[in-house]
Image 1 (tube, rainbow, N blue to C red):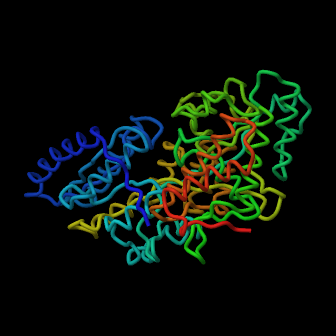
Image 2 (image 1 turned 120 degrees about the horizontal axis):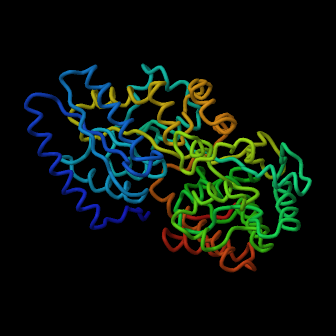
Image 3 (image 1 turned 90 degrees about the vertical axis):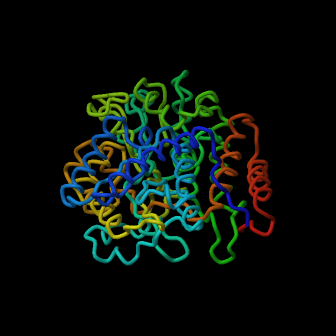
Length: 458
């Protein structure tokens, strides 16, 4: 099996040098106090850098107040998603630079755990007040080979957003309750026929957003298909052709062959997953497969972009399953987790820092400031979360328990990239057939792994 390792870059190496300077400072402090280091995304995870600093310095202050003999060393990582993963990969390759605690993206947990970088957390979990409140699907996202190596600190799931004014203009029902995928296409076709110049439906496609494009696009359709299997646990193989994949790609075919999707320049932009935020506000799109963080981004607190009348214009509803079969809601689930280094000299203190970050106040604050859904089924009911971005937060909380997580495997990103390539083909060549798209995906995954590691499900 080929392992997909993050690529290193000069900026990452420069960042390690900077961490080395921090480590030197840390050594000087260690003469008086125990130092616990924590690495996190500085410019990507939270909605603004100011909110990032406010939350993390708040964590530092809380922990140091409770542990006067401990210094929390903050290790911020600048840049985007890939920059964070690359930097963490480099830091964890040496026990000298490995942070005691790190904020890590869900899709790479298996990769880091398989490399021996992470400590299992199973022994700590029974004594917590929050773990039992996590849905089973969320508890499972940090599991690798039967052990828990990561605990969630904020999820992203997906919903359908729709412009209520546009729906009224073309005499579609408001509130809208699509019961199956065909209902979505019927509405999009009505918009296309009567509102020229409007994007009928936004559905992420292509590789520009990486796995985020799958989490906020095709993955949601696959989750609601007749056969949503990504990795076959019985055979240990990756699925590259199945009824579920064909149903998913057939939906893409309908959207793009009928010219109902977004512009290629937007879909293939590095900012593709956030472009609909502005398009919705500007009344340039009618229906969006979007993420839970939209509502929070429209609040006055975030203003990115601020949209005070969002709730009067942009409706929100769960994504239905293909035929309306139970549970008649479908979503991917992916977010950020907290891990403890296997090289930590103070694993108990590191875990206590994780436990502090997982309390109700800190989790709800992080959810509101970073556009997350708290994993705890108690926290999502709290007024401070529900009323932060109504009605959006309530719907994102509603669908979380039925979410589908990505397989915890180093090879998952290869499978994901194959599906990204397949969806992108419909944008560049709208006449692409489902058979051709399946071939694109199958060829990519098979070439990256091995024919013996892939299969077709009937």
